[in-house]
Image 1 (cartoon, rainbow, N blue to C red):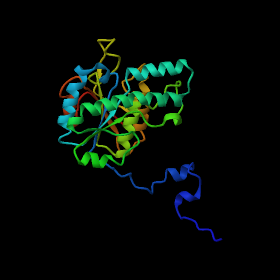
Image 2 (cartoon, rainbow, N blue to C red):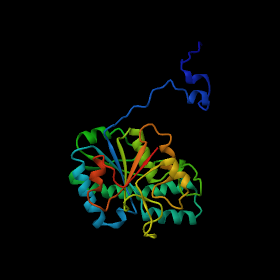
Image 3 (cartoon, rainbow, N blue to C red):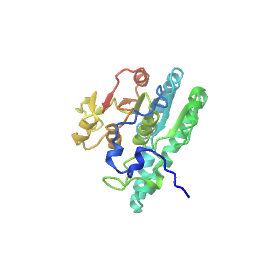
Image 4 (cartoon, helix red, strand yellow):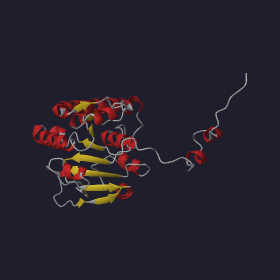
Length: 267
């Protein structure tokens, strides 16, 4: 039987060959949804605060979604931290922690979908991307769990068994894959500080900073997962993310309008 070969430059070596993988003969990836704004609504910072924090934010999201397409990713919050603690105490591996952490993000996504239901809020499963164009074209607000669907295939953490890729990273990767216009993290502070403002009243707001600079600064704690910063450095589309305060009415509206609000982290 005659053998047929498919001619392609990638057939000349393994996919681990640096010479082929870094070749410049391929164009920049397509922006699938170039006008999309992606919001990550914090679990602990927003959802766990209850109605006083969530309901005004829901109203603001609904108003903004009338003029532009919005995709929401939900964080896990305190319940995720609790289940991580239990799983660590039970000596479970990182893949199990990732699967368990996804459950709390799913709960928050379903609650947001119900709160936004009268405005077109629709719960959408994490791996399901093909329904997004139809949902957005019909005026819906898709809401997904922020946890990336690695599950038991989670990458081992650099500093322990808690997954490095959690909800901040999961929502960022969605935005990058879709070629989104904006990536906004909705938290409970006015942006990124040089220290925890809840503990240190002298902490200073950082209005703008580079991802590499932030990684090299060696802060004891960060308002955003380091995996997001690491991916920004090699991303094709989402080379900038915003951190804003969702407890202050109007900040989200201003950020979605392209105004510099809170902290901008750039690649």
